[in-house]
Amino acid sequence: MKRTWLVTGGAGFIGANFVHHLLDHHPDDRVVVYDKLTYAGNLDNLRDRMADPRFAFVHADICDRAAVEAAVDGHGVDTIANFAAETHVDRSIVAPDAFIHTDVLGTHTLLEVARERRLRYHQVSTDEVYGHVPDGASTEADPIAPRSPYAASKAAGDLLVNAYFVTYGLHTTITRGSNNIGPYQYPEKVVSLFATNAIDDLPLPVYGDGRQERDYQWVGDHCEAIDLVVRRGQPGDVFNVGTGTSITNLEMVELILEALGKPASLIRHVEDRPGHDRRYALDVSKLQALGWRPRHTPQAAIVRAVEWYAANPWWWRPIKSGAFREYYEQMYGQRKEIAVGPGAAPA
Ligand code: NAD
Ligand code: DAU
Image (cartoon, protein in one colour):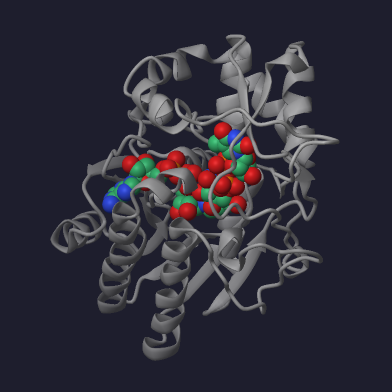
């Protein structure tokens, strides 16, 4: 079935990769990117798509109902894929308000427009809604237990989506993805930050002991999963998306340094993130039963991501020399270096 998509947050990292995926794989689909262009939104992420007659861009906030309605009605949208969100955990700790605005109220606004017009609605969510997972792997049936303002705002979005499925019979689906990495990731997230810092021989600030575990997945694999779930998911379905393998942050850092031929002396252990979830791990068997398989291990995804940043300084250098500097100073300037290892106080 051919679709006309409203891809909210489509100028951000995963949204833009999803737009590339759709235009490359579904020649009959049309794509309307709807984005507020916050610090994380960047039209450079879509610059080679702007002239495509199947592509349109709307600059607006998902909390602005009239603007959402105008975009949906004006372009004949039948499917909303909601990627728009405030997404960085560290920013949510310093300033949570924007997270509630966009991730909760924005999701509600989109659901209302979808309910009135009976649109297909997909919510891009996160494994962070499950909270810290001491052992085993989260299944979709597990209770959600978010612990950061970011994770709580995303969990609220998930609950609203489920309420619109149960109460109004809206055809909704949710995917809960693990840590995405790859092209166009704003260099606040760890792999894009560390790769670009290491290229410039700058320190890599590892939070705490670096033994936290994450499932780093290639963004293109995640996009394929979302596409499949929108086309094949049943109303109310929730799917985890990840490789099913979590690795430590130290292993991730070592892979980045090795891929760039940089020394371990760039590593600095610094004060930990407050409330840091030590481990996320996903059971992805439900999605695999739909026929999806990740094409990359976390290790392969990390190396491929590093190669992209090494080959594309045109994309990240302007970001890192702009307002990002102020952010970096605010986030890392006062952060004390800590000792880890035998004899050091527990991180
Ligand atoms: P991002 O921060 O790179 O991009 C977010 C985009 O949303 C930006 O283009 C921004 O301008 C836009 N946006 C923000 N507020 C908006 C608003 N009020 N109205 C319209 N547009 C707005 O985010 P990302 O990393 O690409 O994440 C996309 C989605 O995937 C988010 O919902 C996030 O929670 C989810 N997710 C991310 C990851 C990850 O590892 N990055 C993993 C799982 C799920
Ligand atoms: O798990 C999915 C989530 O992954 C998404 O929902 C979020 O939008 C996305 O930001 C990401 O959240 P994380 O907090 O896991 O990602 P981040 O890149 O900020 O951090 C990854 C790990 O690296 C985490 O354990 C914290 C650590 N870290 C991060 C930064 C920025 C460091 O050690 N140093 C750093 O400077």
